[in-house]
Each structure stands twice: as C-alpha cells, then as structure tokens.
Length: 70
Image (cartoon, rainbow, N blue to C red; front, side, top):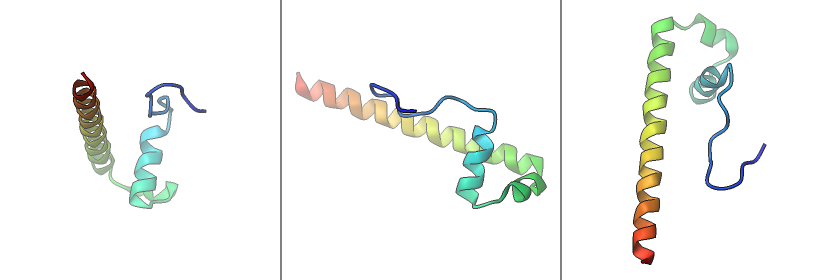
C-alpha cells in the first residue's frame, strides 16, 4: 500500500519488529526464535533508535531546505 504525502513508513504490524530483525540479521524464523530474548530486545531497541535518528535527520534536512527557499 502506498501513501500520499511524505509518509515513508508502513503501519505497525504484529511481527514488524521481528521481520525487520530477520531481514537485517539474515536470520530465519527459527534462528530468531532460538536467539536469547535479551538479544532480540537489544536489537529492537537499537533499530528503533536508529529509525528515530534517521527520521530526525530527515526532518532537519526538510526544515533547512524550506528555510533556504524563503
């Protein structure tokens, strides 16, 4: 599903965080399930922080771009 405007994320899903971890770590579902829970929690925390930092940086670039047009 595509979104109009500047939205670049997809809606939250039940398995969204786990799918993201599997894609980035190149893990299978079984490997994810076998991983220690605290490791999976740490990966979720790190990926969330990375996404927030990227989002903040994008917003900053957009603000600077708008300021340059005035």
